Image (cartoon, rainbow over all chains, first blue to last red):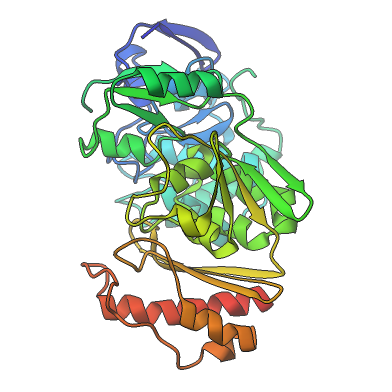
Length: 166
Length: 266
C-alpha cells in the first residue's frame, strides 16, 4: 500500500502501514496519540471515537487507508492550548463526569460532535439517546449527561470548537 | 484480521475491472459490518476494493414520484436529509435508528442492502417500500433482491449504484431494538401506495426479511391498526436464540406491525 497521508490535529502525517492498520492503531502506535482508547475493539463501546472530516466515527472500525486525505481530530487536538481545556473537557472536570477515565476521550469527542450536529441546548433525553454508542462502566452516566449539557452551553458562550482545518 | 490488499477505486468502471482481475475481491463501502467481521476473522478477503472515493455514488434526489438515493449515501445523510424527511419520513426515521451516531456517519445504504443482515433495518425499508435496487448492470426489484440470510440476487461482479424508492401515500417503521446491539429484534415496515399494501419484517425470520401476506390482505380492507387486531403469524421459520424465542418474535411481529400502521396513519 502507498504511504498514508492524512491530517491529524492540524498536522500532516505520513506513514507506511500494513493495509490492515485501523485508524486507532495508526493514531496510537504510529503517532503515539494514546488519548484515543481501545475499549471493546468490536465497535460497541465508543472509547475510540475521533472526528474524521468533522464527524464522529469509531476509529476501531475504519482503516487508516479509508482516511487518507482526511482531517482527523483526536482528544489531543481539542484543547485550545497546553494550559487551557476545551469547554467540554472543562465541563467534565467541573461536573465529575468521569471516574476511571477510560471512556472519557470517546465521550468528549462524541459530546462535541453532538453539539456540532444538534446545538447547544441539549436536554437529558437527547443526550442519553445520543450516547447510545458510548459505554461507561463506572459512572452510571448521570454526571456524564450533566457534563455534556453544561459543556454544550459553555461552547455556545464562546468556547469555540477547534476543528481540524478543513 | 487476516492480511489483505487494499485497493481504492476512483470510478465505477475501475471498481468493475478490479473485481474482474483481483483474487477474492470484496467491496468495501462504509465498512461498519465488514471490518468488524474481518477483525473477528469471521470473514477474510484477499482484496478489498474501497468504494469510498468513487464519484457519483452518494447523493439524494427526488425525481418524479421516486426518491433516488446513492449506494454510498451514509445513514446519517438519509436520516437528516430534508428531502427524505419530506418525501418518505419513515425512511429517514429508519436510517436514524441504525446503530449509533458514529456508525451512522460511516454506514451506507448500498452496503447494508448488499450485506442483507437478517437483523438490519434497511432491508425492511427497501422491501416494505417496494424499492428498486439499481446496479452497474440492471435494476432489481426488492421482491427479487433478498434471497435469505446474508444472501442477495447480486452477482459477484455487480455493484449497487442507487436505490429508487417509489413515494408511498403512507408509511411507517417500528423497531423493537435488541437492548444490547440495537439491531432489530423485530422491525416492521408498512406502506400504502394506492391499493398496494406492503408489510415487511426484519429481525424475525431465519431467512431474513420477508413480507406478511395475511397482514397485507387485512390492511387492504382498511389501513388501520384495528385491521390487524387478533392477527398473528406462525412461529415456524422465526429465529430463536438467547434474545427471544420464535413464539416471542412471532408475537412481536403483530405488535410492531400495529404500531407501524399507527405511526403511518398518525
